Structures are given as structure tokens and as C-alpha cells.
Length: 382
Image 1 (cartoon, rainbow, N blue to C red):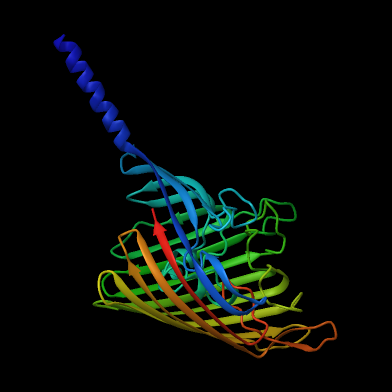
Image 2: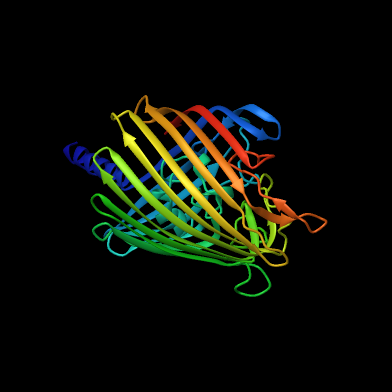
């Protein structure tokens, strides 16, 4: 009897230990509110879904393999909270789906559908994406992907361990389609330093023939713009002083041989042309109390169009908002955005230059060069 009890105790200990060595977590974010926007297909008021933060749910897991090594995975899907449908072309795990190994000595290696280095390292310094989580503050049509509009298919990614605040990594997305090894591929590198009040980050992303949109290519099928060659790079810096944060971000987006644009992106007459954009953003947040925060950002986007015609589109985007935390996971927000556009972009069927129009991210393009939007909503993370 005594031996039986001892054996049962040992087996129970092994079972508890095995259970502790592996875990699976369900997580996500839900964001809904009321949205006002002028000059947007005649719509003034509508129910917003993900105006501030994308709606998504996911599963992430880890298994301890011993010796500081873990097997990890992540499956993450974005959706529209208003109708329950998938956000991106009805793909199941449309944001991320990968498996890999994580070492506390050598870093992490993952394979699957993943975000690029611009998202991983530079986005946290921006008002959009991983920063304040404000989709409305993204640069025009999220041209630099800091707002996480798309991810990379067939990707192998390496992320280093944290060296006293310094972390770096890179990604390569295989084309997986006929027409040459480099046709439809993507690659990206980046680094960030965050130790104390100062933060620095930089990233680079290149896409080849993203217009060759298919289920096999590295280029994701939910890009806002597709082109023969796309290069995006940038850098940023931030400083924290007590309850205040201030960040500056610069990015350059180069799209040569534009082949298509997603619905809701106002880029008329740019087929075959080249669009180069520089985004200059300054943003800040002030935490008046642990629960109450105020944020603001300004972005100047300076563009040039070359090819069969020339143009010089420009956008000024101002964002002002406040957020109040009801708990650690639930908050309410109020946000306002104003954008002014100028210059010309593309040509019409008669070859005449087309005037640039305002186009706040997540909202239908304006019918004029000005657009105003405001939203109040509730956000819950789990």
C-alpha cells in the first residue's frame, strides 16, 4: 500500500511537471464604436470596427524542450466585429500562422506567415500599429506597413535575444511560384534599442512583383498597393520623461511600376508609374493618471510621381485623442483626425493631372482635399 502511494505521488509529480512545461493561450482584441467621417461616399455616421485597434483572436503556445529551448507556435486571425466575417479575403489565419524554436541563448527561428521587420521594430514608435494602437493615425493608405496592413507568406524569420536592450532580426519570404527564384519574394531586416528613457529603431522591407498576387507568392494578398518593386525603410527615436512619451519616425516608401491598388485607396491613373513617399511623424502621449492618457500625432507625407507623368502629392494628418482605462484589459477612447491633401496624383483618361484627395486610413477616401473623422468606442483585450 505504501509503495503504491509513493508510485502514485511520483506519477502525479511527473504529470504536473509535464503540464507546466507546455501551454496554449487564447488571446485577442475587440474594438467597436461610433464613427463620424465627412466626404466619405456620403456616409456621415456609421458603426466602426477596429478604428483604433484591429479586431483579432489567436492561439499561441510553447513547449519546454529542455536546455533553454522551446517549441512555439502562433495562429492569429483578424475579423470584422460588426458582421463576424474575416477581415482579409476570407483567409483563416490571415494575420499570422507560424511554428518555430525559441532559445534563450541563440534567439528565435520561426516559419510561416509573419510580419516584417518594419512592423516588429519601427512600428512601436509610431502612433499606429503597435504604438498607441491607433489605426486612424496610419500614414496615407499605410504605405510603410507600420499599421500592420499585411504580413508575409512563406517566411523564415530570425529574432535575436535581448542584449541589454538591443534586439535585431530579419525575414525572408520565398516566392513559391514559377517564374524564377526572386519573382514574388520578400525580405526584411531591422533592429531596435530600448534601455532606459531612450529608444531607437530602424527597419527595411523589399517586395518583388507584389502585383503577382497569388496564394503562392510571399507578397500578402491584402496589400493596399501592388508594384513591380517596393522598397520601404525608415528609422525612429523616442524619449520617455516621467508620464510623457515623445517619438519621431521617418519612413520612405518606394513603389515602382504600380500594378494595382486595393479598394478604398485613392490612387487614380497610376498604373505603370512610380510613387515615392517620405513620411515624417512626431507623436506624444501624456499619462495624467494611471488610467487617463492623452495622445497626439502629426504626419507630413511628401510624395513624387514619375514615369509617363509627374506629380507631387502631399498629405498633412493631425490626430488628437484621449483614452481611459476601466480596468487592465478594458478601456474607452475618444479620437479625432483631420487630413489635408494637396498636389496632383496620376492622370485621367484624357491625360490630365488628377487632384490629390484626403484619405484617412480605415475610412473611404474623401471627395475633396480635406477630411475629418471622429470616433468614440470601447476596446477589450483578453
